[in-house]
Length: 144
Image 1 (spheres, rainbow, N blue to C red):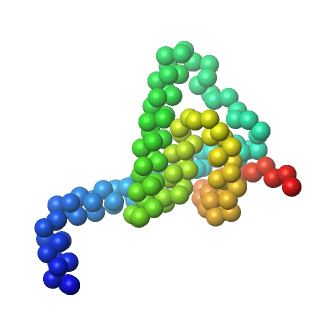
Image 2: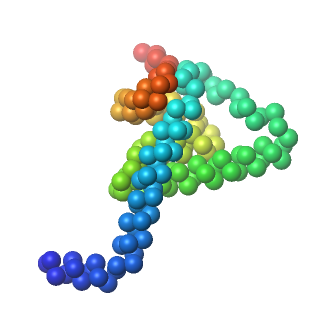
């Protein structure tokens, strides 16, 4: 059995090496990027019934389109990285949530509010925010 594993490693040495390198960069990158993005969320972001207007909504339509396309592409890349981090080292769920926050789709704000209301997610995000000296996110209470 051990001999078979060693043969597999020797025959796939380059793939395993590149996987290790990419995994390491992804892990270190998310340790830096995810907390930086999480602390930028306004504390009252999830308390509104509807999403507030973005700061770039007043720009020229071409600029808005470029920002929208860039933001969505970045969001999809981050989501793919988060999915990979579910099995690789890294903060997979938080990374997926950050990616979802960047892309646009119908019902996105409701999904974000639901995800953030999950206790493990809410506690993790607020732990990061408190460590950075920011106030915790406020979540609107659910009507019962």
